Length: 294
View (cartoon, rainbow, N blue to C red):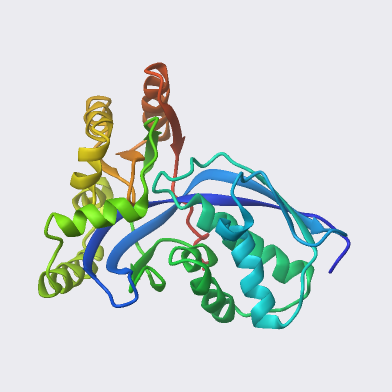
């Protein structure tokens, strides 16, 4: 392990669209989702340790800590043991539908790969990431992705229009497992209907030009059941629309809510207005890889 410290940023994600299918035999649900990384970051420092693996900044037992599990998955894959010190500065709210833990795990996997000189290919790193959590492979990729399977099967979603967001999180946490269970109890979605909607989403990506096109994609199967548990989700959506958002949606299993804006100043003003009501709120933008040079 190299005697140096790496500092990384781990971004949040939003689900611009989330279709949920039937529960699978492994306990997970099939999903079809359009996911985007956005400029709200946790900060991570990774360096060598003489005391084995240490993770600071996440008040979670090691056996339940996705970052620890990510390092352990790399150890199983490579047959090596990594003595590393990991410090996480949390800015992304936990249990909010923004996949902050999965992003942290992916960032630490990249750091270990670099510090230990493993030289893992992106494909191999993604395969190991899928063992850690369904959202982790997404953070090994660049740009927006169309996710299938349990979220680990990814296809680049190129050509999406630009936008800005204001993002707010109510003072509540939602258990992902509970939200999915309530979705099933409410009737869920049949297999044929789910597959049809996935095909329609994929076909519509090529037609999503401009901000109106992005708004037309906004959909989340879990929003109604999550809103029944946390009514403030609906109130935040209404407030974002009143503040000028072209569209608004809950991300993932909630309870975070984002609104789409055409300009950075509009998103910043909306986030500031939401903070004045006592909410945690941020302005952000999608993270896209640079366009290839001519």
